[in-house]
Image 1 (cartoon, rainbow, N blue to C red):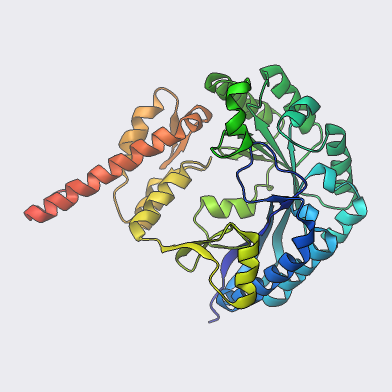
Image 2: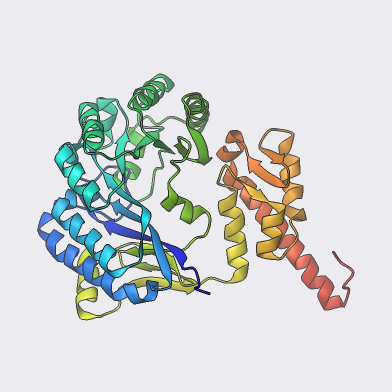
Length: 401
């Protein structure tokens, strides 16, 4: 009997962008067009070298992230896709996503060329429909260009469009956020991501934080809850803390991260969870290219994840999703009692942070706002139970259940 291949996602990091946004802490390089050809060649070579390890797998998702992949140009992107198609078992139904900025994807003929090459999902970084807000955070596009890009995507034949938004921007009011969501929903995307602004240390935003007026935590929470309710009324199902989709359009690639499926990343700063090992590559374009070209090391970290850590991740990531976690699935996978976790969640049901349906527990939108604290409590309860059982075993008391 022929063994069925396991699914695998590929992530290709494209670290080029027109300019760096003030909040961005991803590895990306503005004004580095002269390095694109060398990088594309190195990326193709790395893909080919890794392909034998992926022989037991079927690639069912490919994700071009950045940076701004659309800045790499249609010709280079097509070459990368051709390399994947030639050297990997690429599913005919694979989801192939490309991130893009609105100012760099306004020609429908480029979209058509990419679609014919295999791209069937485009994620546009909109962030806001208010041009003043966009300028404040260093975005180089306008909302008029967003409309042009959406039109190009549709005219180019791509039927799966995702739009990214950020709430909690400098000087943003609830009214402005509501206007942004309404205008974006009117564009009819299949998928929306709504992220709260994070002030990451080391970014320009971090250095500017004292001089900017940022919405406080309470206002950010109100913005989030309003978005959840509004998008539900517009036909979008929440399937993860920050992600909403029309039925059938949840991001299959991103779901891999939240359900502990395997993925292999390529490019500087890219992370992987592949073959039982979690690893990442150097956040340095020149070092990455040189390493690939010479056969040298390009790893920045690598570790084999223990079963115990996997169980913790399964809990943490499962509670981030709208599907939540079930007793049966948890105990089957982790081979440990769900009781300590259920004890935590039961206490959170009355105040409305969690709810139970059958044997499955889910966090509510209000619960998502404090998910880090809830997950922390659940992990602590799980660890306390593990220590209790270990201590009982040391005493020879096997009656503990």
